[in-house]
Amino acid sequence: MSAGAGFRRAAAVLLAFFFIALPAVAQQAPAAAVSPAEKGASSPAIRMIRFGVLPLGGTVESRALWTPLMNDMGRSLGMPVSMYSVPTYEELDRAIGRDEIDMAFLSGKMALDAVMQRRMKVVAQIARHPGLPEHRAVLLVRKAGPLNTLEGLLAQPEKWRLARGDSRSVTGFIVPQSQLFLPNHIEMETRFRSEFVGTHQATALAVANGDADVATNNTTDFERFRQQFPIEAERLQVVWESQPPPGAQMVVRRDFPPEFQARLQNFLTGYGKAKGARGDAEREVLKSLRAAYGYVAADDSALLPQALLERQLGRQHAMAASWVNEAAREQRLQRIEKTYAEQVETLRSAAR
Image 1 (spheres, one colour):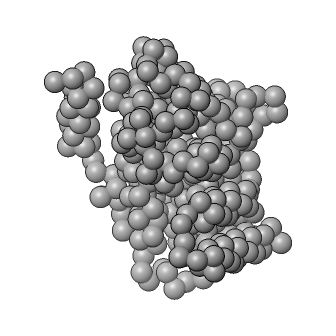
Image 2 (cartoon, helix red, strand yellow):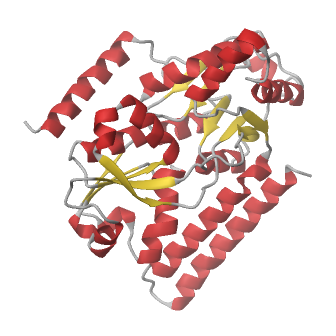
């Protein structure tokens, strides 16, 4: 058995143990935050919050990172906050579609989809501090591997094994595809020798352990990876960085009463701002979530950069694809422009 295979088997056994030993958060989440009788009321009594989070290294790690913030939110709101943590973007997407999520921290792509479906609205985003390095997508390769330059990757993509993020991941898929691969006439899904799809932690481990040759990732998660897996991280190097991509967003259910949405927003924007021991503890929580400067208020218009990015990616695909005739390509381009116009109108209306 290879070292990579042994690692994967051990990881699978460990993950299985955790799923057996710990309560099944996603499967056992309460069916609704509001009772059927309350749904018809103009201001329903909200008894709990089901908070969905993007997978990081895995469901267990996500629980550990987000639980302190969830506990503080519950104390502030005077109600329980349960975590809905799942291992894939797809499962979280489906949970939102089934109205099993009341509030979530989502990638720009997932947040845009949730807002356009009229299920969610943006209330906050991570605060950025001028002068600090901005969050960016990156490509990772091994320092001592056969592939150690960007030029080598772009010259013969079919020679290499790719580890990438879910197609809903902004830095794991959308930005590398749009800013690097498609401009170089490379389709990530079809041009590589093989591909593995996983979390940012899993893709970095795949390259570090020799199970893949190149991985998509981002500066924030790679820094977390350095702290958790220093030996494996030392084997890796960054060969490409993107322009700063659209950020992740905090969203809440659109049908929540406005006053309750405001309470949630006030909790987020005030978190970590207090002086003394409580503020110090909250700031440590924010640091662990890679949100050292806390959260700032935002609305749906914060997703305009994501809508523009998706328009750009759609046009790139349309221009690179083979079509029966030019009229078919033009129809596709027109549909892309129509979708983008609808998104812009919907997102801008939130700021009026």
